[in-house]
Image (cartoon, rainbow, N blue to C red; front, side, top):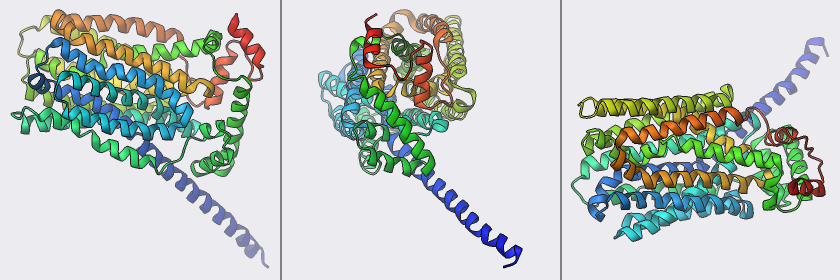
Length: 495
C-alpha cells in the first residue's frame, strides 16, 4: 500500500466519524427544539390569559354590569388562583414529575377557559378565573423548571427565555384577536366570550404535545430511574456530555438524599435563605414596575388618555408587538451580556419611563396629543421590561435554587410574584379612578427606585454556570462544602 493509499484509508473513517457526529448533533438540536416548542405552549397560554382580559373587560363590563371594584375582583381572581397554583404546582411537579404536571395543567387550562367563556354572572366568572389562575401559576413554575433541567448550561438562558417569548407571543395573539373581534363583532354583547374561548386551542396543543416528550432527567434520577434519565440525556446531548452530566446529577442528588426531606427550618441556613430572598425580590420587583397593569388594563389606560375603545384595542397591538420584538433581543443578549447587567438596565429604564409618563400625563391633561404620548412612552417602557427584566426573571428563578428545593423554592418565589400581581390587579382600577394616570405612575416609579437599589446590592451573575455550579457558588460564600453532613446542616439551621 502506497503512502497516499494509507493516508486515504485513515481519512475515510475520520470523515465518517465526523459526519456521524455532526448528524447526531443535528438530531439532538432538532429534538431539543421540539421539546422547547411543545413545553412553551404553557407560556403561550399564560400570556394569552393575561392579555385577553385587557380587551374583554370593556365588553364584559356592559354584559355583566361591572364597576371598578368588580372589575378589579374579576381581574385579580386569576392572580389569586395563580398564587396557589405556583405554590402547589411546584410541590406537585416534585411529586409526580414535571411532564405529568404540565399535562394536568393543560387539562385545567381547557376546562377553566371553557367555564370563563360561558359564565352567566360575576360569581361564576370569578370562580372560573380563579381555577384558570391556578393553571397559569402552575405553568409559570413548572415550564421554566422543566426547560432549565433539560437545557445544557451554555444555552440554558436562551432556552428558558423561549418561554418568555411564548408568554409575550400569547399576549400579542390576545391583543390582535381582541382587536379583530372588537372591530368586527363589537356590536355583539357576547364578543368577550369568543375572546376568552380561543385559549382552548393552545391548551389542546399543549396536552397532546407533552405526550410525545420525555420527563426531566434530573427528576428521573431523583426517583432512582437512572436508566431512563441516561436514555433522555443521550437524546438531547452527545454521549460524552450525557455521561458527565448524569454523573454530576447523581452526585448532587446523592448529597441531597443524605440530608433527608426539606424542612422549613432549613430556610434558616444562611446560603439557602439568601437564595430564597433573592428569588422573592426578583419576583416582586419585576412586577412592581407595573407591567401587568398595562397588560390587564392597557385598553382602559388608553381610553382614559383619550382614545375610543376600538382605537385603544388597535393601540394595544403595538404593546404586544414591541413585547415580542424586545423579547427576541433579550434572548440574544442573555447569554452574551449576562443576567445582572440586563436586570439593572431594565429596572433603570422602566423606572425612568414611568416617571416620564407620570410627568407627561400631569402636564398634558386635556391635550389632544396626550394619548399618543402615553402610547409612545408605554411602548418604550415595554421595550425595557420585556427585553431585559422579563427574560432575566424566569431564567433566574429556574436556575438559582438547588435541586433539593427547586420546586418548593421556585413555587414560593412565583407565589410572591402572583401576590404582587394580585394587589396590582385589584387596586389599579381604583387607583386610576382615584389618583388618575399621573399619580398612579408616580407610585410605580418610586417603587422602581427601591427595586433598583436592592437588585444592585444583591442580584448575582449566573451566566455560563451549570445548575450544580450555581449551587456551589452560593455555598462558598458562606464556607459550606457539598460534603457537609446531615448533622452539620441541621446544626447550621438551628443557629
